Image (cartoon, rainbow, N blue to C red; front, side):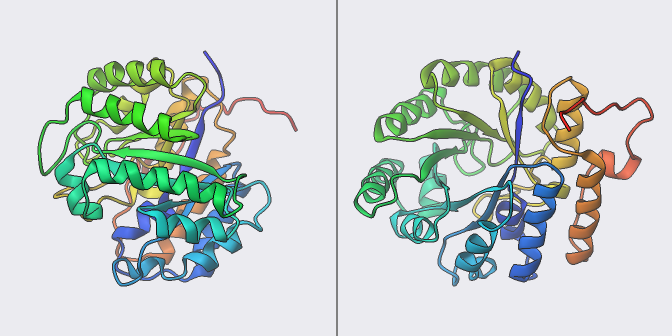
Length: 310
Protein backbone atom coordinates (compact mmCIF):
# COMPACT_ATOMS: atom_id res chain seq x y z
CA UNK A 1 0.00 0.00 0.00
CA UNK A 2 1.26 3.47 -0.94
CA UNK A 3 2.54 5.04 2.30
CA UNK A 4 1.88 8.71 1.45
CA UNK A 5 -1.54 10.25 2.13
CA UNK A 6 -2.48 13.88 1.54
CA UNK A 7 -4.70 15.60 4.10
CA UNK A 8 -6.13 18.69 2.45
CA UNK A 9 -7.09 21.42 4.92
CA UNK A 10 -10.44 22.96 3.92
CA UNK A 11 -11.13 24.96 7.08
CA UNK A 12 -10.42 28.40 5.57
CA UNK A 13 -13.15 27.65 3.03
CA UNK A 14 -15.57 24.96 4.22
CA UNK A 15 -15.02 25.69 7.90
CA UNK A 16 -15.55 29.43 7.61
CA UNK A 17 -18.59 29.35 5.32
CA UNK A 18 -20.75 28.44 8.33
CA UNK A 19 -19.17 30.99 10.71
CA UNK A 20 -21.00 34.28 11.22
CA UNK A 21 -17.88 36.12 12.42
CA UNK A 22 -15.84 37.50 9.50
CA UNK A 23 -12.26 36.39 9.96
CA UNK A 24 -9.81 38.99 8.58
CA UNK A 25 -7.70 38.04 5.58
CA UNK A 26 -4.50 38.18 7.62
CA UNK A 27 -5.89 35.55 10.02
CA UNK A 28 -7.00 33.33 7.14
CA UNK A 29 -3.50 33.56 5.72
CA UNK A 30 -1.97 32.84 9.13
CA UNK A 31 -4.12 29.68 9.19
CA UNK A 32 -2.73 28.66 5.79
CA UNK A 33 0.82 29.54 6.80
CA UNK A 34 0.52 27.58 10.03
CA UNK A 35 -0.67 24.52 8.14
CA UNK A 36 2.27 24.76 5.74
CA UNK A 37 4.67 25.20 8.65
CA UNK A 38 3.25 22.02 10.20
CA UNK A 39 4.05 20.14 6.99
CA UNK A 40 0.73 20.34 5.17
CA UNK A 41 0.85 20.96 1.44
CA UNK A 42 -2.73 21.50 0.32
CA UNK A 43 -5.21 24.11 1.59
CA UNK A 44 -8.52 25.17 0.09
CA UNK A 45 -8.03 28.80 0.97
CA UNK A 46 -11.28 30.48 -0.14
CA UNK A 47 -14.33 30.32 -2.37
CA UNK A 48 -15.13 32.56 -5.30
CA UNK A 49 -18.83 33.18 -4.72
CA UNK A 50 -20.78 36.47 -4.69
CA UNK A 51 -20.07 38.30 -1.38
CA UNK A 52 -23.80 38.98 -0.95
CA UNK A 53 -24.32 35.22 -0.68
CA UNK A 54 -21.32 34.43 1.56
CA UNK A 55 -19.81 37.66 2.98
CA UNK A 56 -16.98 35.62 4.54
CA UNK A 57 -15.36 35.36 1.10
CA UNK A 58 -15.52 38.98 0.02
CA UNK A 59 -11.71 38.98 0.35
CA UNK A 60 -11.24 35.97 -1.95
CA UNK A 61 -8.75 37.63 -4.29
CA UNK A 62 -6.68 39.01 -1.41
CA UNK A 63 -6.52 35.64 0.34
CA UNK A 64 -5.73 33.74 -2.86
CA UNK A 65 -2.87 36.04 -3.79
CA UNK A 66 -1.51 36.02 -0.26
CA UNK A 67 -1.59 32.22 -0.13
CA UNK A 68 0.50 32.05 -3.29
CA UNK A 69 3.36 33.63 -1.34
CA UNK A 70 3.46 30.90 1.32
CA UNK A 71 6.44 28.57 0.75
CA UNK A 72 5.60 24.90 0.26
CA UNK A 73 1.86 25.47 -0.06
CA UNK A 74 -0.37 24.48 -2.97
CA UNK A 75 -3.42 26.67 -2.46
CA UNK A 76 -6.77 25.97 -4.12
CA UNK A 77 -10.17 27.63 -4.23
CA UNK A 78 -13.71 26.30 -4.58
CA UNK A 79 -15.94 27.65 -7.34
CA UNK A 80 -19.60 26.95 -8.21
CA UNK A 81 -19.68 28.33 -11.75
CA UNK A 82 -17.76 29.73 -14.72
CA UNK A 83 -17.59 33.27 -13.39
CA UNK A 84 -16.12 32.08 -10.10
CA UNK A 85 -13.61 29.90 -11.94
CA UNK A 86 -12.48 32.80 -14.11
CA UNK A 87 -11.97 34.97 -11.03
CA UNK A 88 -9.99 32.21 -9.33
CA UNK A 89 -7.78 31.46 -12.33
CA UNK A 90 -7.05 35.16 -12.81
CA UNK A 91 -5.38 35.27 -9.36
CA UNK A 92 -2.77 32.72 -10.43
CA UNK A 93 -3.97 29.88 -8.18
CA UNK A 94 -2.53 26.55 -9.35
CA UNK A 95 -5.69 24.58 -8.49
CA UNK A 96 -9.40 25.33 -8.80
CA UNK A 97 -12.05 22.98 -7.40
CA UNK A 98 -15.49 22.98 -9.02
CA UNK A 99 -18.48 21.50 -7.23
CA UNK A 100 -21.79 20.00 -8.30
CA UNK A 101 -24.20 17.61 -6.57
CA UNK A 102 -25.20 14.07 -7.46
CA UNK A 103 -28.59 14.92 -5.93
CA UNK A 104 -30.65 17.00 -8.33
CA UNK A 105 -32.57 18.53 -5.42
CA UNK A 106 -29.39 19.59 -3.64
CA UNK A 107 -27.84 20.98 -6.82
CA UNK A 108 -30.92 23.12 -7.45
CA UNK A 109 -30.75 24.40 -3.87
CA UNK A 110 -26.98 24.92 -3.84
CA UNK A 111 -26.26 26.42 -7.27
CA UNK A 112 -29.78 26.93 -8.69
CA UNK A 113 -29.50 24.73 -11.74
CA UNK A 114 -29.80 21.07 -12.74
CA UNK A 115 -26.93 18.65 -12.39
CA UNK A 116 -26.74 18.30 -16.18
CA UNK A 117 -26.43 22.09 -16.48
CA UNK A 118 -23.59 22.02 -13.94
CA UNK A 119 -21.73 19.44 -16.02
CA UNK A 120 -22.04 21.70 -19.06
CA UNK A 121 -20.77 24.63 -16.98
CA UNK A 122 -17.70 22.59 -16.09
CA UNK A 123 -17.09 22.01 -19.80
CA UNK A 124 -17.19 25.77 -20.27
CA UNK A 125 -14.65 26.21 -17.45
CA UNK A 126 -12.27 23.75 -19.13
CA UNK A 127 -12.65 25.68 -22.40
CA UNK A 128 -12.12 29.02 -20.61
CA UNK A 129 -8.91 27.75 -19.00
CA UNK A 130 -7.46 27.24 -22.45
CA UNK A 131 -8.95 30.37 -24.03
CA UNK A 132 -7.89 32.66 -21.17
CA UNK A 133 -4.30 31.43 -21.09
CA UNK A 134 -4.44 29.44 -17.84
CA UNK A 135 -3.34 26.07 -19.21
CA UNK A 136 -1.25 25.36 -16.11
CA UNK A 137 -4.21 25.46 -13.73
CA UNK A 138 -5.36 22.05 -12.48
CA UNK A 139 -9.14 21.74 -12.49
CA UNK A 140 -10.68 19.46 -9.90
CA UNK A 141 -14.34 18.48 -9.85
CA UNK A 142 -16.19 17.54 -6.69
CA UNK A 143 -19.36 15.45 -6.57
CA UNK A 144 -21.34 16.49 -3.49
CA UNK A 145 -24.09 14.39 -1.82
CA UNK A 146 -22.51 11.28 -3.37
CA UNK A 147 -23.64 9.04 -0.49
CA UNK A 148 -27.06 10.52 0.23
CA UNK A 149 -28.97 13.79 0.40
CA UNK A 150 -30.69 15.51 3.31
CA UNK A 151 -33.31 16.81 0.87
CA UNK A 152 -33.93 13.90 -1.51
CA UNK A 153 -32.72 10.96 0.56
CA UNK A 154 -31.02 8.09 -1.27
CA UNK A 155 -28.59 8.80 -4.09
CA UNK A 156 -27.99 5.90 -6.45
CA UNK A 157 -24.41 4.82 -7.11
CA UNK A 158 -25.21 4.81 -10.84
CA UNK A 159 -25.90 8.55 -10.69
CA UNK A 160 -22.51 9.21 -9.06
CA UNK A 161 -20.65 6.97 -11.50
CA UNK A 162 -22.37 8.63 -14.44
CA UNK A 163 -21.13 11.99 -13.19
CA UNK A 164 -17.63 10.57 -12.72
CA UNK A 165 -17.62 9.52 -16.37
CA UNK A 166 -19.03 12.86 -17.54
CA UNK A 167 -16.52 14.92 -15.57
CA UNK A 168 -13.58 12.82 -16.73
CA UNK A 169 -14.79 13.20 -20.29
CA UNK A 170 -15.06 16.96 -19.77
CA UNK A 171 -11.40 17.15 -18.73
CA UNK A 172 -11.26 16.99 -14.91
CA UNK A 173 -7.68 16.69 -13.64
CA UNK A 174 -8.84 15.18 -10.34
CA UNK A 175 -12.09 14.21 -8.63
CA UNK A 176 -13.41 14.55 -5.09
CA UNK A 177 -16.27 12.35 -3.88
CA UNK A 178 -18.08 14.06 -1.01
CA UNK A 179 -20.41 12.93 1.76
CA UNK A 180 -21.82 16.42 2.14
CA UNK A 181 -24.47 15.58 4.74
CA UNK A 182 -22.82 12.80 6.75
CA UNK A 183 -24.97 9.93 5.46
CA UNK A 184 -22.18 7.56 4.37
CA UNK A 185 -21.25 4.33 6.13
CA UNK A 186 -18.11 2.23 5.61
CA UNK A 187 -19.49 -0.57 3.44
CA UNK A 188 -21.17 2.00 1.18
CA UNK A 189 -17.93 3.99 0.93
CA UNK A 190 -15.86 0.89 0.24
CA UNK A 191 -18.21 -0.29 -2.51
CA UNK A 192 -18.65 3.04 -4.29
CA UNK A 193 -15.03 4.13 -4.07
CA UNK A 194 -13.76 0.86 -5.55
CA UNK A 195 -15.93 1.56 -8.60
CA UNK A 196 -14.82 5.20 -8.75
CA UNK A 197 -11.15 4.27 -8.53
CA UNK A 198 -11.52 1.68 -11.28
CA UNK A 199 -13.00 4.33 -13.58
CA UNK A 200 -10.45 7.03 -12.82
CA UNK A 201 -7.22 5.22 -13.64
CA UNK A 202 -4.35 7.69 -13.19
CA UNK A 203 -6.66 10.62 -12.38
CA UNK A 204 -6.25 11.42 -8.64
CA UNK A 205 -9.27 10.89 -6.38
CA UNK A 206 -9.96 12.41 -2.96
CA UNK A 207 -12.77 11.93 -0.44
CA UNK A 208 -14.55 14.58 1.61
CA UNK A 209 -16.33 13.21 4.68
CA UNK A 210 -18.43 14.78 7.39
CA UNK A 211 -18.65 13.35 10.89
CA UNK A 212 -22.28 14.38 11.38
CA UNK A 213 -23.27 10.93 12.66
CA UNK A 214 -19.92 9.76 14.01
CA UNK A 215 -18.74 7.65 11.07
CA UNK A 216 -16.31 10.08 9.47
CA UNK A 217 -13.05 8.37 10.42
CA UNK A 218 -14.52 4.91 9.81
CA UNK A 219 -15.30 6.10 6.30
CA UNK A 220 -11.69 7.28 5.88
CA UNK A 221 -10.49 3.75 6.62
CA UNK A 222 -13.01 2.30 4.16
CA UNK A 223 -11.87 4.70 1.44
CA UNK A 224 -8.23 3.81 2.16
CA UNK A 225 -9.08 0.15 1.57
CA UNK A 226 -10.51 1.16 -1.81
CA UNK A 227 -7.26 2.93 -2.73
CA UNK A 228 -8.01 6.58 -1.93
CA UNK A 229 -4.93 8.54 -0.84
CA UNK A 230 -6.25 12.09 -0.31
CA UNK A 231 -8.80 13.41 2.18
CA UNK A 232 -10.33 16.78 2.96
CA UNK A 233 -10.50 17.77 6.63
CA UNK A 234 -11.05 20.91 8.68
CA UNK A 235 -9.26 21.97 11.84
CA UNK A 236 -11.54 21.46 14.82
CA UNK A 237 -14.21 19.90 12.59
CA UNK A 238 -15.50 23.32 11.55
CA UNK A 239 -17.84 23.46 8.62
CA UNK A 240 -20.94 22.10 6.98
CA UNK A 241 -23.32 22.85 4.15
CA UNK A 242 -25.58 25.90 4.47
CA UNK A 243 -28.01 24.43 1.91
CA UNK A 244 -28.75 21.09 3.57
CA UNK A 245 -30.57 20.43 6.89
CA UNK A 246 -28.32 19.25 9.75
CA UNK A 247 -25.22 19.03 7.55
CA UNK A 248 -22.64 19.70 10.24
CA UNK A 249 -19.14 18.71 11.05
CA UNK A 250 -16.27 17.99 8.67
CA UNK A 251 -13.89 15.32 9.86
CA UNK A 252 -11.36 17.24 11.92
CA UNK A 253 -7.83 17.49 10.64
CA UNK A 254 -6.05 16.55 13.87
CA UNK A 255 -7.87 13.26 14.42
CA UNK A 256 -7.60 12.39 10.73
CA UNK A 257 -3.83 12.87 10.77
CA UNK A 258 -3.57 10.87 14.02
CA UNK A 259 -5.59 8.00 12.53
CA UNK A 260 -3.58 7.86 9.31
CA UNK A 261 -0.21 8.01 11.00
CA UNK A 262 -1.27 5.45 13.61
CA UNK A 263 -1.99 3.17 10.66
CA UNK A 264 1.60 3.58 9.48
CA UNK A 265 0.83 6.10 6.74
CA UNK A 266 2.75 9.32 6.23
CA UNK A 267 0.87 12.62 5.98
CA UNK A 268 4.01 14.73 6.29
CA UNK A 269 2.29 16.69 9.07
CA UNK A 270 3.76 17.38 12.50
CA UNK A 271 0.92 16.67 14.94
CA UNK A 272 2.10 18.84 17.84
CA UNK A 273 2.46 21.78 15.44
CA UNK A 274 -1.00 21.05 14.05
CA UNK A 275 -2.50 21.02 17.55
CA UNK A 276 -0.85 24.37 18.27
CA UNK A 277 -2.42 25.77 15.10
CA UNK A 278 -5.80 24.45 16.17
CA UNK A 279 -5.48 26.30 19.49
CA UNK A 280 -4.66 29.52 17.64
CA UNK A 281 -7.62 29.16 15.25
CA UNK A 282 -9.95 28.44 18.18
CA UNK A 283 -8.77 31.64 19.88
CA UNK A 284 -9.66 33.61 16.73
CA UNK A 285 -13.20 32.23 16.66
CA UNK A 286 -14.54 32.41 20.23
CA UNK A 287 -17.91 30.78 20.66
CA UNK A 288 -17.52 28.38 17.73
CA UNK A 289 -17.77 24.67 18.50
CA UNK A 290 -14.45 22.89 17.98
CA UNK A 291 -14.41 19.09 18.21
CA UNK A 292 -11.58 16.59 18.31
CA UNK A 293 -10.55 13.69 20.51
CA UNK A 294 -6.79 14.19 20.18
CA UNK A 295 -7.04 17.86 21.08
CA UNK A 296 -9.09 17.00 24.16
CA UNK A 297 -7.12 13.97 25.38
CA UNK A 298 -3.65 14.68 24.01
CA UNK A 299 -1.35 12.35 22.14
CA UNK A 300 -0.79 8.97 23.82
CA UNK A 301 2.64 8.13 25.19
CA UNK A 302 2.81 5.29 22.66
CA UNK A 303 2.40 7.58 19.64
CA UNK A 304 5.40 7.60 17.32
CA UNK A 305 5.54 9.91 14.35
CA UNK A 306 6.87 8.28 11.17
CA UNK A 307 10.54 8.83 10.42
CA UNK A 308 10.98 11.54 7.80
CA UNK A 309 14.01 12.86 5.96
CA UNK A 310 15.61 15.86 7.66
